[in-house]
Length: 156
Image (cartoon, rainbow, N blue to C red; front, side, top):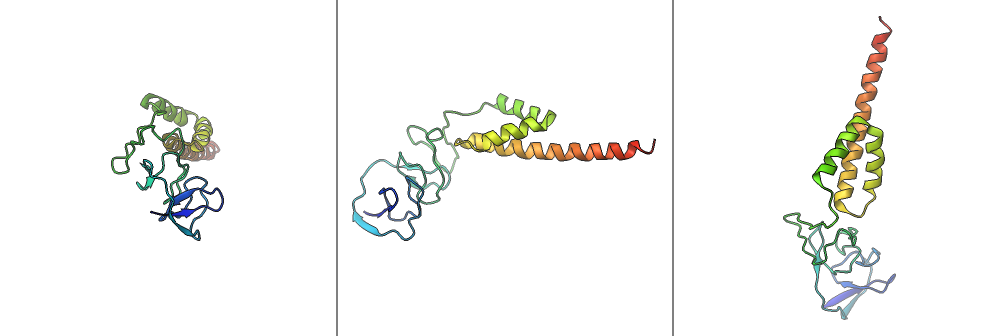
């Protein structure tokens, strides 16, 4: 089977790869070499579903970062049912509490959302996006309400 050899980290990638599975370097202009790829078990990318090596840090097809915390040991995630088998998940009660705190104190939601959005874990990243959006929306609504109340108080 033919492989593309990464000039940056010397990793052998499948010939259809556009991005190095180890360092994320572009393989568009990489030379395709003969049959030097090791036959080892492959997992699937949780985003695009293509096969990846178990130790890969980036998907060779879509370039998505694959973290060790979000990758299950048995590589049992699939794209179709979105079952990523996370070990480090966030419970529903914790999410609910964070949403309630964000509604009551938007600044706390913005801070926690900013911290979560840079996480390697997909669930934490999604939670971070939700908290940031909710915090921004609540802040805008609060600003509008304060502006209306301040404008109406001058008439009395």
